[in-house]
Amino acid sequence: MKKADLKEFLDFKTAQYNTTAFIAEDPVSIPHLFQKKEDIEISGFLAATIAWGNRKSILKNANQMMALMDHSPHDFILNHSDKDLDRFEGFVHRTFNANDLKYFLKALRNIYLHHGGLEDIFVKYQTETHLQNAIHELKKIFFELAHQVRTEKHVSDPHKNSAAKRINMYLRWMIRKDKHGVDFGIWETISAAKLSCPLDVHSGNIARKLGILHRKANDAKAVKELDWELRKMDPLDPVKYDFALFGLGVYEKDQF
Image (cartoon, rainbow, N blue to C red; front, side, top):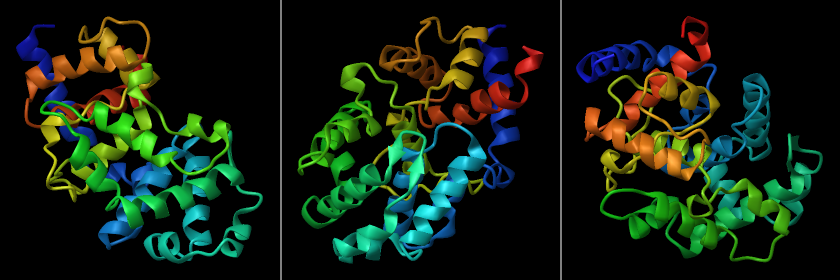
């Protein structure tokens, strides 16, 4: 497929899947429950953290997290006591367990009390072209409190060659200004041009079949390669094509 035809095709598929109909069955539906900026940020971060595996299970467990925080995540993060954390006993999503979640709540409180919030970390550590270094710095800040080593695996690090799919997805939600009502665009001090595609098995397979990704592994190097190709097609909003790649990979994979 010629590059001009490929862009036209991906633009068409992006328009097809970047709609509010996408929201209901996607983890992005969790932050859409809220109006307050900090509630959107925190609920989105937690939902993205467990966004792997069966989608029904993801939504069920993410909604359970919100209910356990009395549907006021920012207030709960700032004001919870150690005893309040007892209610999370028994929570589990795949390998993310109650101890992991309780640490995440403490780490988020530390970030909002002492680091200005999640957005400020990404604003401070962004580079001129990307946010992958900021993800690395986020992980360092996130685990500056005493914690179990096992919990570290639930925050990815591009500097260790991780594709950091879930955090890149979260950043798309927070930064990309979406005329179609899916992504929030509430972090207005960071350009969507710096976003990286949330690369997973679905989007990776389609990208390879379309000839815009050649690396076989879905890792940080593959993200960099895919970013290069998507930014050539739309330098201002490259990750809009995540909708096309994901939609094709999940709903139309048999046609490729």
